[in-house]
Length: 150
Ligand SMILES: Cc1cc2nc3c(=O)[nH]c(=O)nc-3n(C[C@H](O)[C@H](O)[C@H](O)COP(=O)(O)O)c2cc1C
Image 1 (cartoon, rainbow, N blue to C red):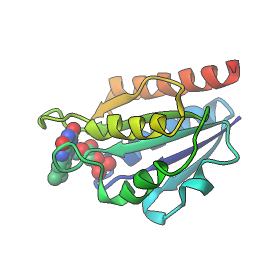
Image 2 (cartoon, rainbow, N blue to C red):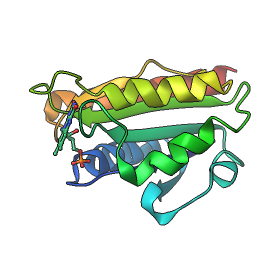
Image 3 (cartoon, rainbow, N blue to C red):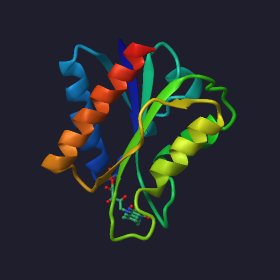
Image 4 (tube, protein in one colour):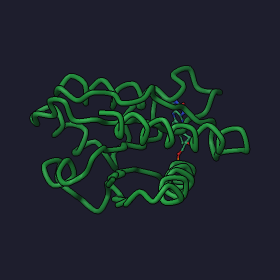
C-alpha cells in the first residue's frame, strides 16, 4: 500500500505530526511519500499513484488556511477527486477562537470535489504530546485498515 502526505508547517508542529504519522505507517510496511506544499507540487501530480492521500495543515490568521498551502487548497476546487480516499489532520492552538479551523476547511474542500474522508479528521494541540502521538498512530492505523478493507 502506498500513501502520499502533503503538509504545510511554519514552526514545525505540523511537520512533527507528519513525521509521527509517517513513522507509524512505515512501521506497518506502508510505502510513504511526503511533500512540503511549499515545494509547489500540483494537485494533479499529488493525487495520483497512491492508495490514500493525507493532508496536514496548521491554522493561521483567524481560522485561515496558511499562505504556504493556499494555492494547492484553491486548486483542489477545480479538480475531480471523486471516490479518492483522503485523510486530513492538523495542529492548532486552543487559545484561538477557531481551533484547527483550517483542518475543517481543507476537509470540506476535498469532499466538495468528491473525495471521501477515509477517517475522521484529527486535530492536535501544538506539538504532539504523548497522548497526541498515540492518537496520530491510531489515525494511521485506522486509515490503513479502512483502505485495505475497500
Ligand atoms: C498569526 C497566527 C494565527 C493563528 N491562528 C490560529 C487559529 O485561528 N486557530 C488555531 O487553532 N491556531 C492558530 N494559530 C496557532 C497555530 O496554528 C499553531 O501554533 C500550529 O501548531 C502551528 O503549526 P506549525 O508549527 O506546523 O507551523 C495561529 C498562530 C499564529 C502565529
